[in-house]
Length: 377
Image (cartoon, rainbow, N blue to C red; front, top):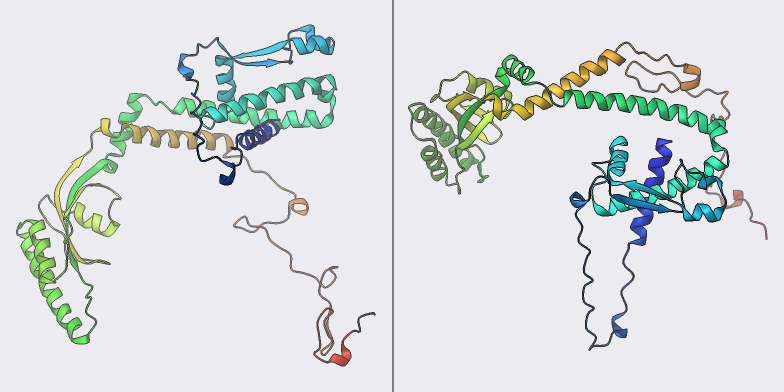
């Protein structure tokens, strides 16, 4: 039922989108030169927040509410009754179907409401026709009930774990304090790429490069300003636009693992060894190191706790569940879970039969015109 409902809504949305396409433009040759463009039609201002919860937002004429006897009366009475849906009822319907976030713009809201009106009309007629006694309907409702119960339980878990208590946040912060390390880093890049491709120039550049790398590293270790050293490197190597050495504040995982390990072993003010990277021989300096206060990572902790608690709760329910499938019906699977395909057998109806060497394959040519089939005249 849910799938049919959503499919119908999608169809209604497509229909709405198609009916809202602008008409084709009039050919320019038929437009008089003196014709002035029509003034824009003023849009009706709207603000959903100004609509009270009990105010009607959808009025469906011709569909009787379930609690009235008009639906069982003649068509004249049915056409005169109406079904009214308030703002609160409409929002509850979207929330119950988990569509509130997906249907957020006015066009989608309007299309949903119009599609729902059509669904109500069809549902009323289905009740009159006795569709509820159809075995297919009953099976569909059984499956829909299972799906709805599962979705509702998952939704209740989402709400339960979306706002953990402050005590749980504090405990998680202390247990994972290393995750919230931050360090201010500077980097000096000594490029190893030489634009001059002549062998003599490459050899000279490599010699100059290694000497400079060692010298710059020693000077950085003695405390010289990193940006001054970076500018000097680019000037000596005749390279334009030296980069900024300040990399800002980094967190764990923000740099390659090997370099991060070297950095975290330093004291503020110390530099790493010459790090061999794609860009060249680089030097990293640890300017400072600190721990981010819990209030600045609270949102991150809430997300981590939500994911952790959801996994625990779902595993507690489904961890011991193991469906056993009939391989004759579903087909065997390998260890990785992929479908195992049976090798073709000669007894199979579509198995290719042996072809005698020199025998032409049906539909192919032997290259001898005398052996070509003669087309009927």
